[in-house]
Length: 141
Image 1 (cartoon, rainbow, N blue to C red):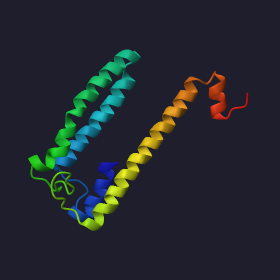
Image 2 (cartoon, rainbow, N blue to C red):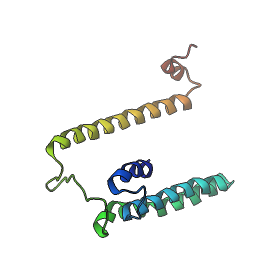
Image 3 (cartoon, rainbow, N blue to C red):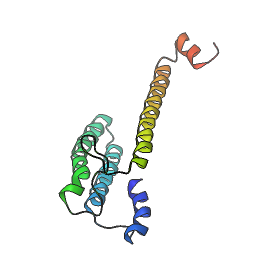
Image 4 (tube, helix red, strand yellow):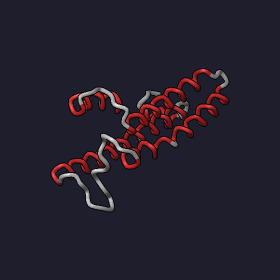
């Protein structure tokens, strides 16, 4: 999603859909790694071997995360550095900082609620044969 929406935003800002910017290139490599993990997992029939191979490739892909994060600092880039700093002075206008923090907190609460709902559903599915689970799910006995 970030590469697609970035291209849509980049066309009017930079005059091109794509440029070989360090951050864009490192995110493209991460996308290829993700596709590789899914493809490798699907290509190996033995589920245990597939999970082990895909897990190894995913761990290799984690190395790219700091490269993506610090690419704007390490190399000359079209992307700006951080606008919000926890320890230093933020370079973002205060009128935008408040809504940013509200959305950040709201997103965390949404994630926590979704995670709890998914855990509840998984627990009810695992215990579906028991009376308490049927009652909690609203299934008549």
